[in-house]
Length: 118
Image (cartoon, rainbow, N blue to C red):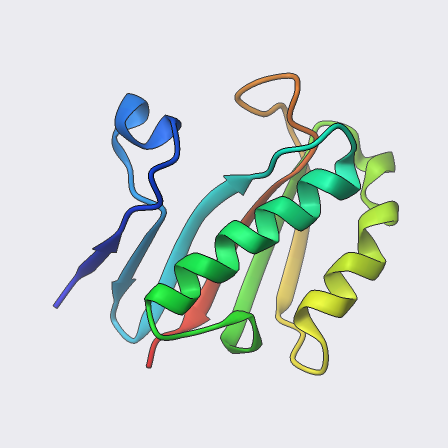
């Protein structure tokens, strides 16, 4: 069984995707950008959106097994580290950071998560 979770984000209907898909014992959360003026504001916001999608799927950040971070400027990743440590706590997932252009230059970080489903 596949379950799709929509968050109502502006890009979902424009591009044709959903925030998360629950399938095969996992919750796959799409790359998520947040709001704010700084990379740290956007990081916190993106994690909040991801946490809400995981909660709707019956999971949570503590169940994350994989995370990928995309940043247009790799130098901006380090200021996010304390936020990420706090978000994942004692249950850190395997992680990768990729320097890449994002859908809009105003975005400084995009986060994609895979977590265990209930």
